[in-house]
Length: 405
Ligand code: CTP
Image (tube, rainbow, N blue to C red; front, side, top):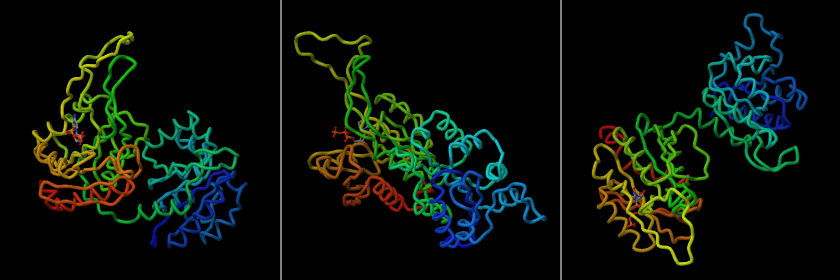
């Protein structure tokens, strides 16, 4: 599957070097032309011979050992590679590359290449979370380097946490995906997605909110990104990592979300409203902490703007997708919202289903369309479901029809 693909694996010095041997072996088995470059510290863990045997190529580690006098090895390799993966990537190599340092063959080659470079970090969990390392990772991400995040588990240092080199099988899968020409039906389209709860302040220390985790919206954003969309994720307060390659706008209240969505609406090709927006907010925000008294308290609530309904009224070329969380008459209430809010699609879920709803990693939904589609779905992980739903919408719209809208 990777025939004619040239992959340079740069191995830096950490205990996970042994996994890089498996990575090289799997890439070579998949047909890739693999070359390996090592730092001196990497050689302390595994000998170059292991990599030479697995890659069936010479292994490079000395900038000044020019095996072929007709070329300069590090420039030649930098130009040769279609893809470079630094695995394992130590904190040291991240720090050096982030700062443009080129003091060995690996860092010199990384500075000289125009190929795509991926880092697969592996280190002790505290080291990984060290501020300098985080800063370097952010800097490298902004410079266009991609990261294969370490996974969590037992670390060689005895700790349990984030810092294990991603499994070679998973890295090979990413390499496959990278080299497989993909169908990107949303390329050139702006897709705006809202996610999470909103928070409506009562006073400086209290608020009204709901149990939305944001997982469905974040999954929709990742799926839109993977289908080629320029993706904007307008997110309420959630405890999820920001997806890479997605522009995230953080908001707090329903009003903030309304403003943020309206700002992005005009040139959007699709708007997906997965957020659980508060329907009511405290009628007045107290600027000082409210003091308790002996009696009961009554909180006067005022309606928030129905964002989706307003978008439906202002609809132009946008494909409008809503969500409905229901506890009874799921399909009937869904159809009603679809009509009432002038939507193209609505994704309805029964939040009483043990596999569906807030906080779960799975969801059970039915996709309804303005044109009469009723497409139920079995329980599925939210990530998978997001992709299936978007693909269905794209198919319903017809790729060409979608482009012409
Ligand atoms: N929604 C919105 N603005 C609001 C409330 C909801 O945009 N103020 C959107 C949600 O993002 C979701 C859809 O409307 O996509 C349906 O949300 P839901 O709370 O199920 O529906 P409501 O319109 O609030 O209807 P009801 O309370 O009658 O169930």
